[in-house]
Length: 114
Length: 116
Image (cartoon, rainbow over all chains, first blue to last red; front, side, top):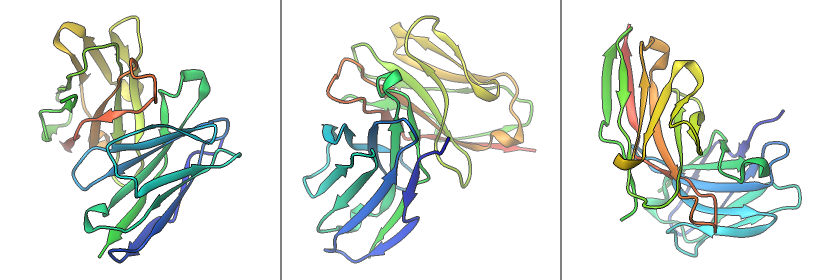
């Protein structure tokens, strides 16, 4: 069984640029959630996708957007990057059998905005 | 504000000592509860979970947690820690009454350092 994978591992961007992060969910999982983990903090929920539709959103501005594809992989897009967007971005997938509550996390993408 | 609180930011123990990490949440409805662990250089892993039933739940690697509804708490325990337990531990809550998404709300984490 393949776990959750994310790409790229690290990324450096300049303020004002746009970035796309990618996530492949664990086999059999149709729900993908994205989290932002700032240094020294716990992960914060950005949004969740279920069957290619956004299924809930945390307290993040509209410049954070996402997509889910028919194979359940997902993208997180961030426009107009700000310095505070520097963080570890985590993707988690979950199984329909547990109602999406038990989530399995990928290794994350470390984004640095300069 | 609705939140998850982990009061200990950094805990240092010697091997074989007993461990208890505190976690309190402020959601008033039905919740699902989790402890996640992040070992150095590794991704977040589920340690244990509580959905319903017996409030004392057992997880991997000898960890257990007790859900006390009246105290809004879900403390993590281990009778005897090992050096390999050195990691960051996160308490997390899924407010299951919020049907719009199965989001998980995390605490800020407790760093556990074990002296060999």
